[in-house]
Image (spheres, rainbow, N blue to C red):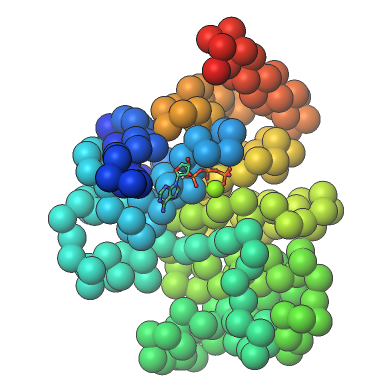
Length: 252
Ligand SMILES: Nc1ncnc2c1ncn2[C@@H]1O[C@H](COP(=O)(O)OP(=O)(O)OP(=O)(O)O)[C@@H](O)[C@H]1O
Ligand SMILES: [Mg+2]
């Protein structure tokens, strides 16, 4: 469903070109839940922003739901962002002046119409994510976990193929993180979305089907979950440790 092939991305700074992504290959299947982990600066957010159609890349290709992203104009990219992708950020990005239900409907409000069907979908998302009782409250009056579940519900209001999440549990305690991960699991099972999640949190990643380890702009390792969640978390921690000790061996 998502194919990334030989992706290269550099930033220009002080007249110099700094390579950040150096030939990334990866795929995400329909309804798959995939995490990306790696040290700070390894290029995780840059990768997410390329897939999100927010920043251009020099080389390689990204195909989403059968459509190639390179060479599309701004209007076509905006359409893909609206119709095929949902976004969840570390700091929730809810609008303070709107209540929970209205926040979930924001992508539809932006499109200029809130149909009866959208209203019904918002109500079913409220109940799916256990936030029905706070639907009239404002973001300032709910917990971090409730804010993030609201943001996950909002990401689903246009029935995307793929949810892109950058450290969605970064500001949450472990109980709220668990609730957000459960909301992703529900999104995939009941609404058929795939999830691509950047995270530093091995606990959150251990609920995924697959974890991609990124290092210095390259895919260092991919781990497929074949065991129970807690054993997978142990295996992830070992792989991350091995990745950083490879640094020590090469003197970086
Ligand atoms: N707009 C930009 N212009 C120039 N350099 C950038 C820009 N954005 C990111 N970089 C650089 O690219 C590299 C990768 O950044 P990126 O944000 O993708 O890392 P990350 O893996 O998401 O890190 P973190 O875990 O800290 O969020 C870093 O060295 C960063 O300084
Ligand atoms: Mg980042």
